[in-house]
Image (cartoon, rainbow, N blue to C red; front, top):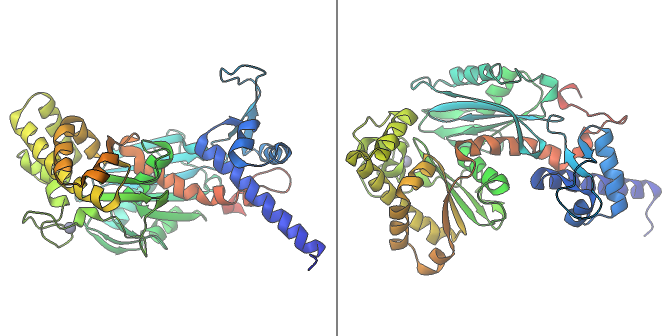
Length: 410
Ligand SMILES: [Zn+2]
């Protein structure tokens, strides 16, 4: 069958869009590089790269720096990089103890970030929406212009339906059935998508793309705060479950009789969450990140009660990690939130218990490491999901006269 001229035109437009996406995604994930590196990374021809990079630079989405040599022999090769503030996303993170906001551009470049401690008891959904929107004014560059932001990503310590950002339940915030994405979108009044995800799912995404797990395709990220969540990558892909609820390992049945905020008894997080460490150290379970800071500082100063609390919590963490190693056979377990700090001080007992509670074959393949992005991993992951539509089809953002098209004004 012969294709009509119109069909051929549509096909070449589809190819152009896919190729632009390949270039932008490569620059976003792997950083600035020469046109030759882009040829190698994308498999596109040198002339295709020239034309498409020309299109991206004309629109202000990419730039070429002719001065860069990067210490290589031979002729200096100009590097292509994305312009970070061309199409930035706004990211929010709602922890039990803190709130943060950031403006993050293509390439994962943080253009501005602000974090505040969240007063306990200030849990009302509307209060938190107000606090988040208020945070924007405290960003170093001031409140972003509505037309300049491509999308908003939000990390929440809760079970989130990925389809529409409904927070089904956030036990440690006391929320259930909160249409958080819609509420925040309303309050912001920007005509852009608001994407809400579980904080550990976003943490693993960020660690996989830019942190401790770059190039590692089987990863379990375990995030410890008041509660405990996980984000899991299997064979390079996030494990979401049917609706995005997968990874609630904090609520795996464990030993113990402490009632969990989820309504069950003896969940793993009642033994390894922030409250468990605080209680072992003789502090109230709800003493929050400030309390945890005191326990770690006391342990560093040699305080026996704090050291004992850290050891016991490290052991309970290691036991559970052993089960996760058996279940998922990861190459890497990344410890985020306060677990990164716990790992610094209890690395040995964590590994001892993991050894005692895992099978030799999967254990021999796994490394346990602290999160490289620290407590910011969920925030950076929120920006990654918000920027995804730009990566998937940057052509929609290129105007006809070499300008960028903003969704809010489109
Ligand atoms: Zn529970």
